[in-house]
Image (cartoon, rainbow, N blue to C red; front, side):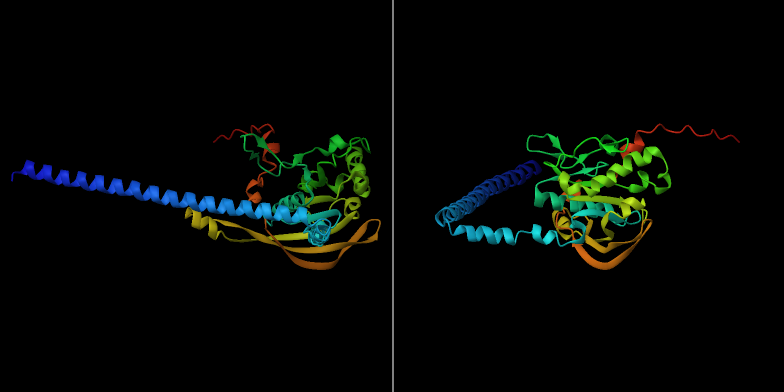
Length: 314
């Protein structure tokens, strides 16, 4: 047998083996897909049967099912969320140094409250990135607002859309209100009606005011209107499930350890923090935290003109 005949024989064997493998792969693929299709059909049929069964039970148990409804409402999670210090109706101050987790905790609280009430938040800065719906259109849950559109010349000139929003969030008070400016007319023309709005918030359909700040205190009028004062500290953990899916190392926020206080007014210009309460706020909306805008003030500074600087010479 010469070399050419040997080569043809080897390549012929390889072709036969390849055809055999391809045929069996196709055969096993079809068998596997058929099994998976059958399993999906069984699961879908089972789910539909359970769905129709529970629907029948709801209709057929009238009027006894009102006991069921009463119990569901009584044990609805909203009753539990209102026990958390940051959700006590009124104004809340969120204090901490950069990176402590005050903005991430606030965003999580915004989503938490939105899912339980069906209403979103008005924020002074864009705290979330855009989401995409099933039609490919971008949308946001929370809406940016400008306080100077609502509070002009010492009066509130616009009403809040309480049909859609029930939480007002002031991101980074350090850049907005400094009590050293409280002698200026422009400052008081905005802050004083805002404080008045905090006093009448329930009449306006607003449940919560959140003030996020790197300063431990702000304008005394704001501080004395607070229901709570909170210092969060984010705790991160290894994202094991993300590693299983991607093989990549990533850490996510497990939750926030929060020190909460009540505000006790001493006199017209002083207050103190009392009733310290240390508690754990778990991150239960990890998927939504992907939409938290970590650089929510970037656009504001990006719109400023660049400084030319001074040309350096030797």
